[in-house]
Image (tube, rainbow, N blue to C red):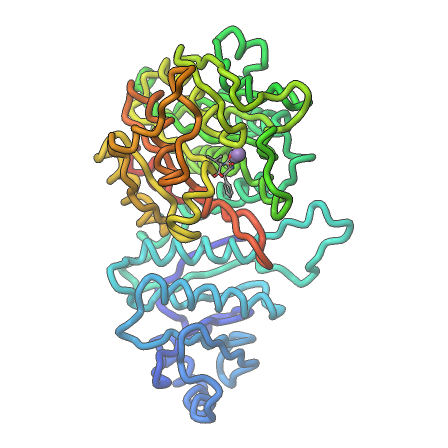
Length: 494
Ligand code: BES
Ligand code: MN
Ligand code: ZN
C-alpha cells in the first residue's frame, strides 16, 4: 500500500473515495464543508434526512456526488467536537477503514487527519492512520486452499493535512510504514501454527531477514548451547522432537564500538505445558507463545527499514514445550548459564526457564539496556486484561522511557511493581530458586525470577500475555509490542 500526503483538500481531487468527518449535531468538518459547498449543499440535505447524526464511528457512503470529482464520499461520525481524544480518533479511523473495505475503491483521500485531536499532533494522527489502514489490509490466508477475500484491495492512501504540517506528516508516514511492515511480520509469525512455525522455521526467517536487510545472524544449535552451559534452556527443549535454536541478530546502524541495546523475545513455538500439561480448551492459542520473539523480529525489520543509527542485538531462545519420555519432570533441578540452580516445580512455567539463559547470554554485549518481551503469565491477563502490556523493570528511568514510547505508539504499557517484598516466595529447599511461587501476584513473581539474572544492566520485562493476540471471533496476532519497541529505539537513536 502506498501512502502520500497533500496539503488542504483540492476541490477537484480525483479519488476512488474521499473520507470526510461529521461531528455530532450534523456539524461538518472543514473537508466536509468543502464538499458541501461544491455540491450545492448536498451533504447538508442528506444529513437533514437523518441518515447520519455524527455519532462516533457511524458511517454513510455516498456515490457520485454532483460537482465532486471523487467517485464516492464516505462520511464518518466523529462524535462531539470537543471530545475528540485518542480513542475517539481511532474509533472513527477504524470504522472508516472497515466501511472502505466494503467498497470497490482502490485509492482513498483521507481528510480526518485534519481533525483536532486533544494532546496529539499531526505526527501521531498520520502514524495512526497509516497503521490502521495497514491493519485493515492485513490478511492471513496463506494456509487456506483458496483466498478468503477476493475484493479489490486498497492500493493508495492520500492523507490531507494543513499546509504547515506536510513535512511532519511525511516523516511520520514513512516511519509508520516501516513500523507497519514490522507489525505485519510479527502477525504472520504469530498466526503461523506450531507445525509450520517451529524453532527451525524461526531461525530460517531470521537468516532471511538478516540477508535482506544486511545484518548479522547467528544460530546457536543444541551443541553450542551445551558448551555455553545453557542447562535451563536445554531442559525445556529436551521434551521435544524439534531441535532448539538460539537465534542472535546483530544490527549495526550506530558507531562501530558503541554498546548496543539488547532485545530478548520468548520463542516457545508451542506451549503444551509439558508434563504439567495444560487443559485442552483454547490450547491452540499456545501457538502464540512465541509472540515475544515475533515482536523482536518485527522490531528488527522496522529499524532496518528506517535505517536507524543505533546498534541493536536481538536474542531469541526458541523451542517447543512438550511432554514426552525425555521431558523435564516436576522436581527436576537444572543449572542455568549463570550458575544458579533451579528447581522446576511446574514445567508449564517454561518461559522464564528459557529466558534466564538468554538474559545471561546478552551480558557479553555490555548492553546499555535490555528489553525482554514474553507471553509469560496467565496472571498478567487477569491483572491488566487485553489493553495494557505489563511492564517490570530494575530501572525506573528505563521504565519511564518505555512507557513514553508505548504512549507515543499507542501500544501502551503499565508499570508494575518489582519490589523486594515479592521476592519472598522464590524459595526452594533443594535448589537456589524454584521456578514458581504461589498463585498470588503470579505475573510479578515471574518477573522476580527473571530479575535474578539481570543484575548486570538496566533491564525491562514486558509481559505481553494479554496483548500479543486476540481470542474469539477475531482471533489473531496483534503485532504488539512492535510499535512500542520501534518508538523506544527511535528515541534511543536520536
Ligand atoms: N505461555 C504461558 C502463559 C500464558 C497463558 C499466556 C495463557 C497467555 C495465556 C506460560 O508459559 C505459562 O504457562 N505460565 C503459567 C505459569 C504458572 C505455571 C506459574 C501460567 O500463567 O499459568
Ligand atoms: Mn507454559
Ligand atoms: Zn509459555
